[in-house]
Amino acid sequence: MRTLAFLAAVSFSTACFAQYPTKPPRLLVGFVPGGGVDQTARIAVAGLAPIWNQQIVVENKTGAGGTIAAEMTARSAPDGYTLVLCNIGSHGIGPSLYKKVGYDPIADVTHIGLIGVTPNVMAVHPSVPANTVAEFIAYAKANPGKLSYGSSGVGTSTHLGVELFKSMTGVNIVHVPYKGGAASSADLAGGQIQLVITNLPEQVAYIKSGRTRALGVSTTRRSPAFPDVPSISDTVPGYDVTVWYGLCGPGGMPRALVQQMNADLVKAVSSPETAKRLMDAGIEPSSSTADQFSAFAKAEVVRWAKVIKEAGIAAE
Image (cartoon, rainbow, N blue to C red; front, side, top):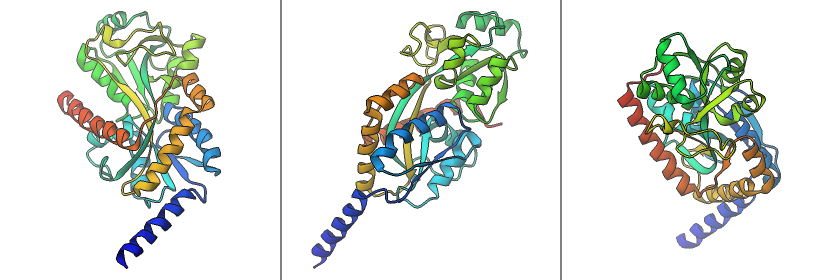
């Protein structure tokens, strides 16, 4: 009897998951509209909505390097109706950078699937007399404390990536945190700050229009979007920051539901339309299984915890 009851419960549960979603899910985004995380979220939503036959409500819950949105998701019911666009900042760096976050980046998170990866791009205002990473380092060292860089917030890859660059090169640049990468990129183009090492999607239009100048990308491999832009590591050996975006939910989501959502996400990311939109934004579409994404994200938590400790970086 117990076996029959168990099988009946499993059958009922599977049937429920097969109908997911029966109402509009909401997707939390930890950064302001227009930035790399927000762009990725909206592209993913456009790809998933027709598959799920439901509107997906995007809500921007900004602050603390994306960890506010991550905490809100972690505290939600594990039913698939509250999700978060997880990324290197909120689910890789932030938990080790901030002294108090209201979630465990491993135990309180269900990693559903990877969406894409991109480098950060090192860009300067055209008034900066540097056309290469080496020239920028020389100029910054000749003007200690006189240059400023913008980030999408304390604890993000756009903050920690520059701090890592500073520690590896010995330059002295002042940090100006913003509420998102779109804002810092706009101020770079306007000349209010001199440097960003920010998510590539936030800089594509500015670089192409000549309002900012790209000096290097943060990954050891060049970006297909800008193949002529070298890697920062060509000048600063060992420098490597890969930005990633994925779909996550609260910890404890049923495995059958996660597998279904992962299959739908892979289908969406793999579609020619969604893949093109991601690539046009400077993001390389990258699908994965839920287990693969979980292992990758957990390794990122460990990696950045070590970097933060060794570099002595703390949230301001």
